[in-house]
Image 1 (tube, rainbow, N blue to C red):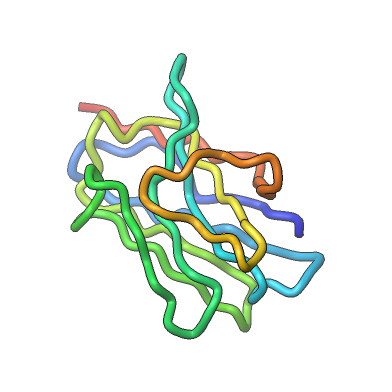
Image 2: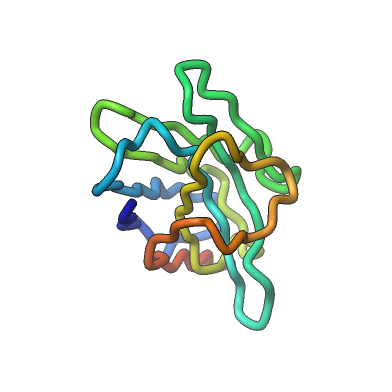
Length: 127
């Protein structure tokens, strides 16, 4: 599966952005989808994920709970990350990722060799 992320930009603290990830190439509904982020000099960290099925089970890292919302549209092969009340510590390159079932993501997931990745989109939050 090929992934293309977009929607990053510069925003002031307290602002909002919506990231999008377009998938192509294989059956989108066979993949759990996730968002990771990587700040300068740091590892790539799990942010949020959503399951492949109609239940759309979601998982979030504690630091974004209540502020970020992940969603997917299987008909459009899209996954989104709505980010509200952004803070300077949210500044990072954000990557969408896909993991083929039966594997899935969980809180604290690490990147896996079998994951598929988009190219990343930069989110910068100024104070």
